[in-house]
Every structure is written in structure tokens, then in C-alpha cells.
Image (cartoon, rainbow, N blue to C red; front, side, top):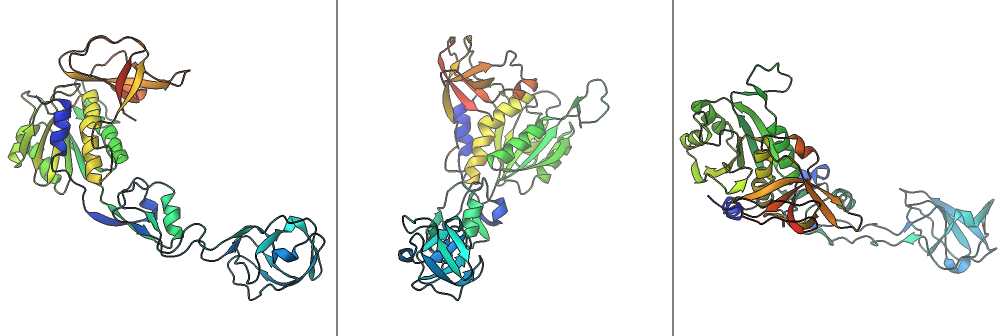
Length: 398
């Protein structure tokens, strides 16, 4: 059996970022830039008024001065007026500043009297003009290749007059379930049947990690039928069969994988939960088989599928276990011979320290503990008991 770290290393071997695609600005958050994004224009492209008021020469804007109104410039238009000595142009926020002006008197500091403007308040310095290029200039690098794009990048890039961006392709992750006992939500269950539920969590997690999850259905407990599901997954970057991972008489997934031409890399991991998790290669697709028990499937997805998805998606960090430290809120007993990952809730104590409490029942069939669990407590093989207040490693779950 491989250790957790050895299994992660094996799944990431020869895993490289995928190809490049162009996407609209609405699809940027969470994607990785494939190339530098260079501004096409200067922003703002002209010196613009920051306020509603009057564009003037600062030296003319003395308190009680009367200036001749010679024009008006709303936003979106180019004034044909220029400002000379003793003159003012009515201007609005965002409008281009006319030639000759170096100051905007806000309208609250003025009084309009016919074709004249009376300055009613002293002006301490030239202000209220946003100079051309104060945000960025044509040719500036707005985003570097490898940057992870967030929600605001769309606005920044749009302001540079760029409608779409080159990003690294998200890995296509095909998921299917296996088991005659599985039925869909809303079904009238017969005795011995259970609801097919794991894929709802797994697909959502994969999408959040930067993949593109595609669920193709439930394969029955039949070797040829399971093989056909591997064939349906053609074009996937990662295939995730859920269930049928053990050695029972009706566990056909690994044998069907072999029938489909797959090459097994490993078939067990010294981890609890999730010992039967296995990994192989089918054509260009990496295949990571998960046990059907909910905790085994979800925990092992977080440990092994997450770094693989993030590596293929091109994320600069995250292609390994991302460990943090927290303090135990209760005592923990000694661990057994397999590395264990306990579902736990992390909170912030009164002193600001991160505190974790493990779920009281860690049975691998249980889903409900994940409702409150936001981290996994990592317990090394044969770890001794730990006491309340001890620092311990945790893995972020959500």
C-alpha cells in the first residue's frame, strides 16, 4: 500500500497544465491566465473631471471671483471650448477637461448668475481632475501569465478595451457511479436500496477546485456495462468511478477498467477512510477510483482529486496537501497503523486561535458530519494520543 504522500506523488506524475482557450470576461473568476494581458488603451484615455462643477484655471478661482461661462461639457462628449483667463466651462463627472483648465470648482462652491459663475468658497489647490493614465497606460501588463483571475479582473480588463482573455483549459472530469442498489432521489425505495448521492458533492467540489465535472450516470453491477461507462468517458482528462473499488464478487470497476485498456498504477492507499482508492491511466485520461462509502469518497477526493485537478488547471499552488495548524478543542486518542483524516469543525477561539473539534462519529458511511465539517484533522500512522490545546495539522475541506 502507498502512503498518502506517495499516492499524491503518483497521481501528479506527468500531470501538466492543459491547453489554452479564449473565454469572455464573464467567465474569468477562478481561471488561470495563459499569457500576459496587455492594456490596449490608456485609462482614463483623457483627463476627466472627478466632480460636477466648472472647469477653470486655478489662478482665476479666487473667492468672490466672477468668471465668464463659455461652454458646457457633459460626460461622453468632447467640448469644443477651451478655457482662457477669466473663463469657465460647465462640466460634469467623467467629462473631458477642456484645454487650458487645470482645476474643477465643485458646483457647491459656486453660484450661477446668468452667463457668469461666482466662486463662493476659497480654493486651496488645483484638484478634481483625473489625469489621463492615472489608472494604467497602453502597453501596461495588467495580468501576468499564471495569475489566478478573480471577480474584479473582468472590470480591469474590460476597461483596457479587451473583450476576452486566454486562459488555461479546465480539466474535464467525468464522474460515474456504480451499484445496483443505487437509486435516484425521489425514488420509492425497495428494501436494500439506497439513494445515489455521492456525485452531487463530488461534482460540486471538482467545479470549485477548477475542474469541469460531468456526471454520466450510474453503471449497474455488470462488467461489460461498467466497461461501456469508461468508453463513454472518452475525451476526459480525469475519470472518477465511484463505488465497486473493493474486492467483492460484485466489484467490477477495476476489471472493467482493465478490459477497457487501462493500466493500473496502484490499488490501495494506507489511509482511513478510503483504503480501496485506486489509480490508473486510460489513454490520455487519469483514472482515480473512489470507494462508494460517502466519507471515503469525499475525503479521498479532497486528498487526491483536488491536487490533480489544480495541477491540470495550471494553478501555481495547491497541487499537494495544503496543511495548516490548529489547536484541539478536545482530547484525541492514539491513531492506528493507517494515516487518518477526521472530519472536524474549525472555529476561532476568543484568543483568535484556530480551534478544531472532530465529529463524534467518524463512520465512513455517514454524510451528515460533513454538514458542519469544514476541515480534516490529519493523524499520522501510529500517532500517539493528543490533548486538548495541542497543535495539530488540518486540511481545509471547504
